[in-house]
Length: 180
Image (cartoon, rainbow, N blue to C red; front, top):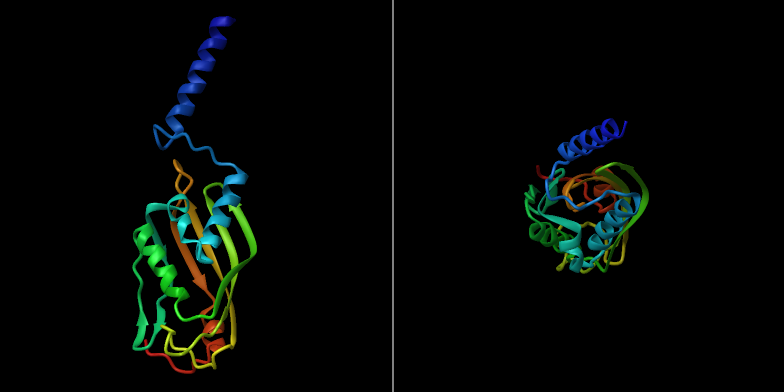
């Protein structure tokens, strides 16, 4: 009986060890960590760029629609955490106020889904990097959904799939014509 229990324990440990994707993985996923990932991500978007190294994997990638630009739409390839932070800083440029709020969050193991709203106030037009056809001080808000994929060994964000409600955003920004 003792030997059979011992063999069962050894085989259970062996099967668990083989299921681990990262051989030296000491990260254990829990609800608290998922919530921390959401908070760090939103706080980073809201301007706390010091959270870069605890929030993002070094090779984080971002997938989203093309963005409107003054000479047509632009694609922003993001493949590192420093590129992501640079993109976030660029997104803040020119706005008098720029803040994300969370409407809803869903968790599925290493997937975190955030339904958010951007609340922003138009800044001086000569400082805005995206074309805005509204007067300075105009409040702009629109929604989006970001799907975060957490790394299995570190819990850091390794990929973001982002979908904004662009028609609503463009309408709020007063744009009536966009070059593709």
